[in-house]
Every structure is written in C-alpha cells, then in structure tokens.
Length: 124
Ligand code: HEC
Image (cartoon, rainbow, N blue to C red; front, side, top):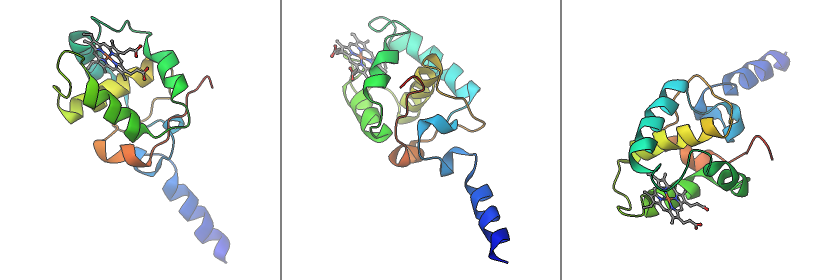
C-alpha cells in the first residue's frame, strides 16, 4: 500500500538542518554556538551585550534568515563591515540562537541552509 511510502517520506524530512524550514527545528549544534560565542566576545560584545539580540530576533520573526545574515555580515562589525569569514558569521548566528533559546539540534548550521530557513522566535 502507499501508506508505507508516505511514512518513509515524512521520516526522511525529519531532523537535520538540510530538511528544516524554520529555525524552530534545531538547525545548529552546541559546538557551533560555542565557537560563535568566542567570536562574539571578540568582535561584537564591545557594542552589543549578550542579550541584545533577543528582541532583535523577535522583531525578525517570520522573515528570511538569509536576509538577516546579509544585514549582519554586510554591516557588522560597525568598524569593519564584512570583516569576518562567512562561516564565522554563521557560527555567531548559532550563538545568537542559543542565547535566544532557539532549540538546539544535532548538526551545524551551514551557509547553504540560510536561504530555505525562516526565523521562528521561540517566544513569539
Ligand atoms: C563598534 C560598535 C559595533 C560593533 C563592534 C558591532 N556592532 Fe552591530 N550594531 C552597531 C550599531 C550602532 C547598530 C545599529 C543599532 C540600531 O539600529 O539601533 C548595530 C546593529 C546591528 C544589527 C541589526 C540589528 C537590528 O536591529 O536589526 C545586527 C544584526 C548587528 N548589529 C550584529 C552585529 C554582530 C554580529 C557584530 C559582531 C560581528 C556586531 N554587530 C558588532 C554597532 C556595532
């Protein structure tokens, strides 16, 4: 029967950032958030305290993660826009998610995942 095929298809979509469509689905892992924390302390903390992005991400609820990334990578740090590597900005994103209690997952967030993800703030 076709029922078995349907269950297999649904199972294939669950888990792993590649199949996720929103940031509520655990799209980064713990180690990535840790790398991001180090980078954040070096490059961002001087102007943005650690809770700064909670309300910011809430305002971005429902919007494309790729657009948020472009704003961040294109304009920050204010003293050196675009000065970090793309992968470093992605790690910082993972850290911002962890500070804002976005669910953590089992795989790293990748640059190639950003386009398909919508920001879904957990407290929205
Ligand atoms: C020299 C100070 C400075 C540094 C360092 C800095 N920022 Fe900013 N950032 C600002 C200012 C000023 C704004 C504009 C704030 C506003 O619009 O109220 C801003 C705004 C932002 C925004 C847009 C927030 C929004 O309201 O949509 C993001 C995202 C951001 N910064 C990320 C970062 C990240 C990530 C880093 C580290 C890589 C960083 N910033 C480092 C000063 C800084």
